[in-house]
Image (cartoon, rainbow, N blue to C red; front, side):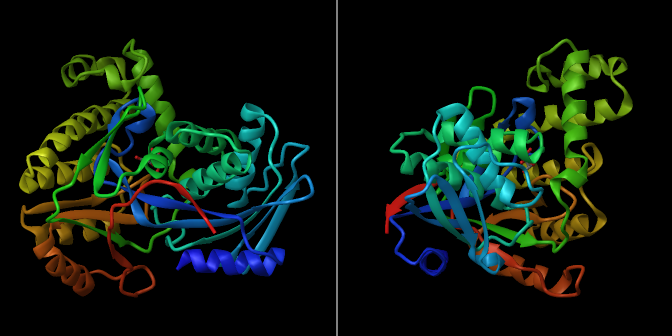
Length: 381
Ligand code: GLA
């Protein structure tokens, strides 16, 4: 669907056919929230929804792009100078071009038409999909091989330096390294990615709460900084190196906020390890307990939930009755929840949400059963 839209937008904007297509997926995260920037482990996966970029080279020294979902809004800049920040979604393309030019040398001249089917701002990482997709397009046009890790790092640097969010690498690496049917156990310190096969009979449901908040407005950078300060006060390079016992024994070294944040991070990293084992054992009840505990910790210790999100999560947990779990997902303060259950329970879960939850606009929420997909890829037109 997005492929056809991207190709049509390309033809309309540039008057010819694109030369290649980049498919860049969004992501969901099963467990491991707010630990990637603390060097922790996470369990995300690429999904069947995402962004398509129709691409072709140009005769001039420019990068020109249009967004078909935004009324074919067009932007462009010269390859000869570093593009400037403009303060909106275009910075994900501009930032990637700027970092690419600094790190890889010359920017290839390129036309791009972008189309997507991720609900904007819903926490399914449309920004990472756009950034990684743009990086893949530039590398392909320049005839350069870049590994999933390099693509993810490039897009993450763009986000940190250009957009200004001090994000970790989870979203970009999930988008770059996804494997269909597998969650990715990512060690955010070594950047090792180990695909973990998901049992066929498991189903993942994302529900959009309908509540929108930009990462920058959620105290994201503040929390990341507090986590780094907490680690430093404990004499460690990151919270990854702190055990639960060490943290409890050194509570007096931290202020109350740092202690709460650190308790979430340390507990969540331990839950991710247990979750990887529970997936291997096909133990959905254990997974449910871990996912539910993750939500409680994000709500009470990390404090990135909202009463409406807690309500949406609670009604899903109730419907699952221990056979699976539900939690808020992503940066927090809005966006989607994620729930895991056995396929045969998915309809019951779906019905419960439809009956009992309404978004801020009073409407039924957007819901989506996740198809776990491969990471970013280039295909010929
Ligand atoms: C956002 C960031 C990620 C990660 C999550 C929380 O999605 O971009 O790096 O920190 O929040 O887990």
